[in-house]
Amino acid sequence: PRLTRREEDALVLACAGHSNKAIAQVLEVSPSTVGVLLFRAAGKLNAKSRSELLSNYEQFRAAAAMKAADEDGSGNRK
Image 1 (cartoon, rainbow, N blue to C red):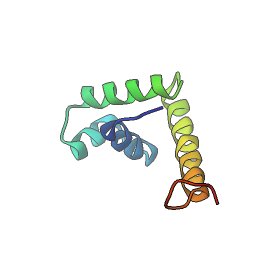
Image 2 (cartoon, rainbow, N blue to C red):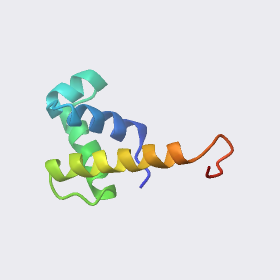
Image 3 (spheres, one colour):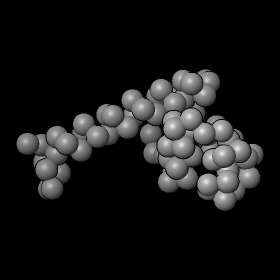
Image 4 (cartoon, rainbow, N blue to C red):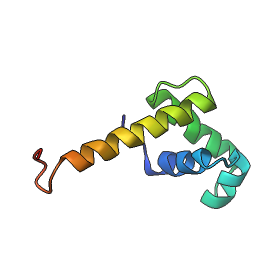
């Protein structure tokens, strides 16, 4: 899935245990905007709850890191 930068920003903070209100203060948006960002990310990551969203996002990040480690600078596998 293609997450937007703002969705990822919100997810990183949510994974660190921050509430929507705290995330909103950091991102300088309203708490309802944070809710929308997380809701959209949940749809992209097939999550039905906040805990499932955070778990799926951690798995998504781990898979992306593994893929990046497997590729060299030209995009070819080692």
